[in-house]
Length: 171
Image (cartoon, rainbow, N blue to C red; front, side, top):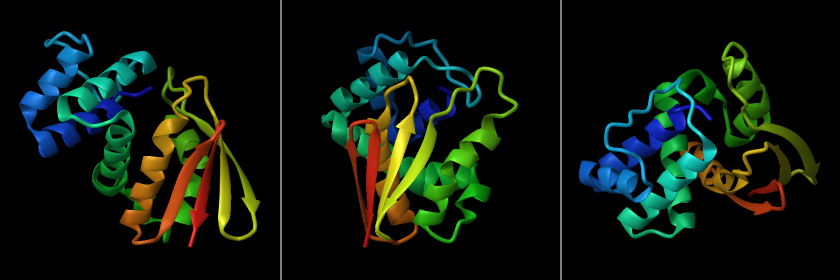
């Protein structure tokens, strides 16, 4: 995965809990203090999950709470700031339905990029099933990201993982 994910997590922890909690998170994850992350640098998924576990421990959160906080921060603060053009969608629904294309376009020229891919299935007009396709197995991050989009677009929606799919219920 790209380092932008870790940079977002670092920004969240530093702003919400302080720089010392970020250092503690890295220490808990077994990441050397000198290790730096760059937006376009590669980060191993297992390393990212260790950092997320370190954040949960340092901030006294469950993993689900830590992932939700990350998702909300990405979708309401970091993403709009760093990837603003993509957040010009009119709704969470529009952005989600364009997410596979966004990943494809953004990473086309990045040699080592392997973004998750999505297939979409509608059940009625209010239930979107996003089939998550990635060897990373990070579908658990999706509900927080999607609920964050709901906050960003001021929409009420719910999201939950079912197998390798995310069920998004629009109100």
